[in-house]
Image (cartoon, rainbow over all chains, first blue to last red; front, side, top):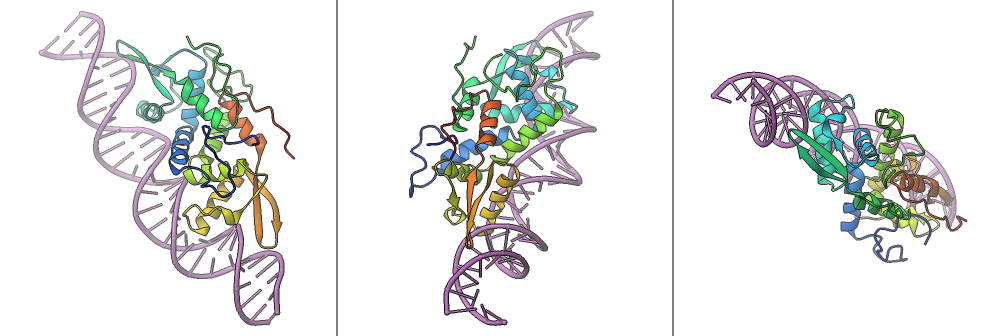
Length: 117
Length: 117
DNA sequence: CTGTTATATTGATAGACGTCAATGAAAGCA
DNA sequence: TGCTTTCATTGACGTCTATCAATATAACAG
């Protein structure tokens, strides 16, 4: 098989076989949709550079409710999660497995994983 | 830097630096948006399993105009391209570089690329 | 030129999405 | 108790998206 969507070890790409289990296509599409907004890409990128980041740092020229909205979408998609709460501050972190799964589906070798914590 | 969004060799992830050039975030988001639909994920997956595929094979329970619509979106996003036209038939193929770029942005090692054609 | 087949485009419509103001919830402080 | 701060939720509004029917375009057959 060439470089491309491997889609989680599915026996994809057979000549007459159903191209992709509908569920898998929907699951993948849902994950991509979570990244289909500049603000959310920026948030994920920011989280990729630190163990966890306070919500108060995600001012992207957007209102606070809008940032919260994007955090919720990423959270419900399983791409990020709450790392800790200190007082009224909330810190988010990436869910590396979810991101790696997407990279893998796109045909990339999921990273050697230089140790999470 | 941990596993995560590398975003095309940008000096991302600095403590106080602007998290991500707005343009790059928008470009990435646009690419992800192109994959944010089950039909389009199925199309790309199908193309990942062959050198090129005839449009007439993309019947996903959708009408012909709808399939054409999705092909257009993927084409304008640069993820697929017309491979050849034979008579009234049109064959599409993947643009491997584009997919690899996305996988790379997600932190995956872009595939060893087993020779394109 | 007429007819047929395979894609693409247009137009219309219902539903989803991004955004913000207003409000709520929870934690800390006086 | 009351006030402040941080984040989440709700409600409203305009825009975008997915979908299909209808139509156009392009290539071939006769």
